[in-house]
Image 1 (tube, rainbow, N blue to C red):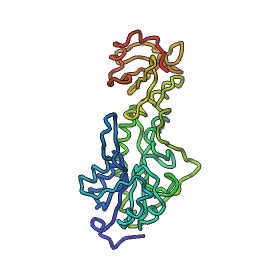
Image 2 (cartoon, one colour; image 1 turned 90 degrees about the vertical axis):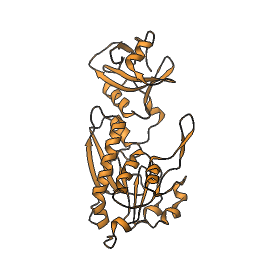
Image 3 (cartoon, helix red, strand yellow; image 1 turned 135 degrees about the horizontal axis):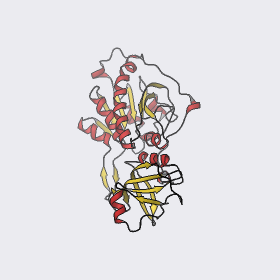
Length: 317
């Protein structure tokens, strides 16, 4: 439906739904250009060992701009509250819950989503991590109409970005957040005036970027150096890739690959270098350059190796 009669800056009723830092960056761009009537976010949560209660990043942005925030524990129990805002357009970005059909169908201009992958690739909650873990050379942002099926709605616009060899989940997250903010702002005028296109996703090309599990965090040194390198950077800066050394968990936050080839068991500490310690892989060696033993702070791989007795020859599992 075309809303020619609306003064976009003043009269368009936008409700924004999102939770983490990625979504907050997109919201910052939106509120600088449009009036957002309300924000829906996850509840404040306890975090860390101290149990400190923290508000979602999106809520912080909304508070800074004096935007009303609602935080239902379950969105399906707050349908009437959301619809009471009479939204012309709902924009979602990493909200974190399945949105009921009654909400999806309500806005005159639809319910759209900002997703951090080139759909139909990597549907799901962890597309940024998975793009690096799986060794993709590129990823991007998709603006799409929401549907009841996860990330399966029609595509409105897309923009891709190269995944650099030294990108981590953190650096790629920040790049994609800016790209998502900008692409949304580029795309919104066509949605508002009814000139946007919509392309159905090819179900034959669907892949999934499911949330990271504890099992996904564990390193497997029977894999290639490239796979392990991707694993480390794909989980940096959260939640971190780990192995076990002498029965203790050690997280490897940063690494590099070498051309060295060694005999023996995969996972064996091969040598100590100026910047870290080497570990044998299926086809070579990877050097751990930033590590963290359980209960300790992060430190360089070299400092850790220099302070760990008889490290060379030990096996990480």
